[in-house]
Length: 458
Figure 1 (cartoon, rainbow, N blue to C red):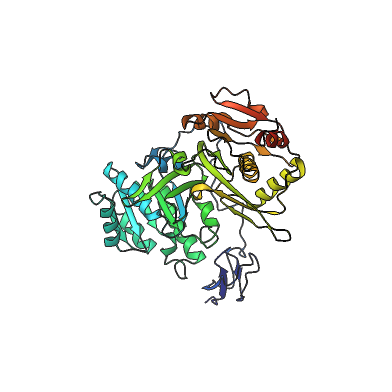
Figure 2 (figure 1 turned 120 degrees about the horizontal axis):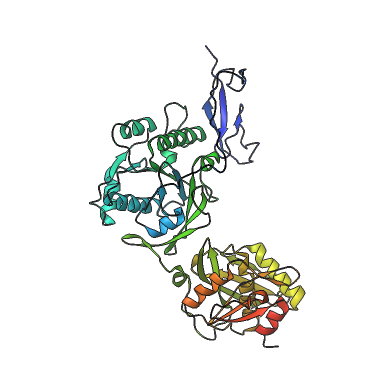
């Protein structure tokens, strides 16, 4: 009989060690090594195989082979379908992660109920709540009459045995994958080996029976999906549900999608009756702006193919001599702000060294678009000079370290969205002044020329 060896598996990166340690040697995370039962003295990788016999031939196809587009199943929620690329794909696996209480279960229950009311067989399996709790939430959302099959179970074998007895569901929701366990693997639910094995069995069921499987995943304190990183590689689509509890909005962002584009977003608003779609997210992130307010600029951000207008707010406070200035940023990259401040000082002659600088993206929105450089610079110059940016103007463009203002992608799309919301002017790179958008465009080649325009020098 083979001797059972102890091994310790890192719950963060999945590396295996034969001795316990407080810190993982591979990912440097602390207190992540958990004891799991190992195999015998000889692992499958140590066994010798004759790789030239005993296998079966694999069918090879060319790149020019005819292929049909995958069938889509609309969820009944347009914003969710946008993030998915058009709806759920048959025989696919989708992983959705987000902070606790952000609304993952609510969104999936709404989608499952709408698809069931449309005539599709839908199964919802909860490993965290009893079936009565899920039923009560459905009644609160006004979906208590939806023919969704509910179950409270954590054994993957029991779930697959139940689903394999009759017609397979078109959609299977597993809430959550960290609560599932497979009796083929030793270890507690939530460990790396259990999460990987449970997900593999559920994905195999999806591929064999044509079911679209949705796995709900927990997130760690740094915002990444808990469990082994290989879990994100196993599934076809990874969605991130983001938002602040203090704010009403929620953003569903596609991080990975084998059947569609990435960086598409769906915007929702949390209400008493559940998550409501936000058809015009620009109106959600724009506050009531008035004439004469300094330090505010509207920026047309781009999320996938969707332009979203957000308000950038800046506050510059002059300090007494000798005080240490502070830089605080909410919703933007701190390093990017330091770069814009450095270019304003080195290339434009403005001084922020004796000032505290605060930058905020209104509504709790997070901007990663480099085209926000010019809008941030406009807000900073406006706050420093106490000269307001025109209330009917938007600004966008990328700032180089040389002080050059470079054009950005999808400029016409940004301008079109600004025109739809009533904006009449745009401060843009000079290379875009020929755009026929209907807005009055003012182009700038350098940041110095832009600052002169802001200060009324020319």
